[in-house]
Image (cartoon, rainbow, N blue to C red):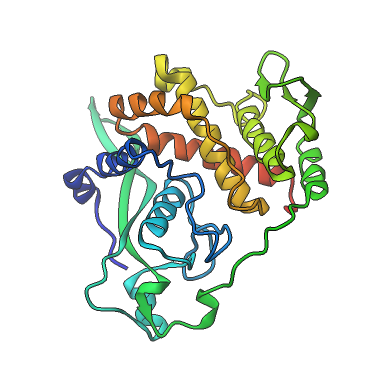
Length: 297
């Protein structure tokens, strides 16, 4: 696996590349974290490494987007080195997708008078991964069949939600999280088109609820100021999509919140790192929800 250095990342401006891709999709009317798969070919699956481990954060969205753009059904994304280790090879002429990774490093600096301090900083690496369908000779396990999603187990989802210890009240016609009361308001199940639509909406509000100080403690106003509401909604949207994949929601579970798209586009145009930040916050929220409810569904 070829890792690219911080200098490489700066030269390519990875944050700008990712943001440009997302903006291009939004301008086409496509929201990359919603239904990024072909239901006729496969069910919803998180992108996976060769080991079966799930990719995380912004990489989930970028690999989902690449899969739908190129028609890949396999959820596996494999590096050239891994393919060679398995004894297979990437077909000649195939182009891979960029996968990013953030790490932490420390550097000592002299502040004078013989004193030194140690600073921590984040660094960015990226490498290239290929979909299993670009590689010849892989075992069948890299090509899982469609996931049956005809009937969503709402009772199991309710049992999962009960473990979160997040209060829920009945509302008439709006789903929302009320920070001042730390409560989720949900219309009755019968008000929704389907059980999976209800569950997806509840997931969305649960991601919002993780922002409370005694949970994740997310305050978007510090990072995004005037764009705080749009940024928080972006976190909830991405988080609900990733969470839905973990919990087995069917491919058509996400509804359209078109009114937010304009605000998201403005946010991304003003801040090239906004999407990276939102995706990372979304992953943190999902981790909290899954850990709180462990063992997961």
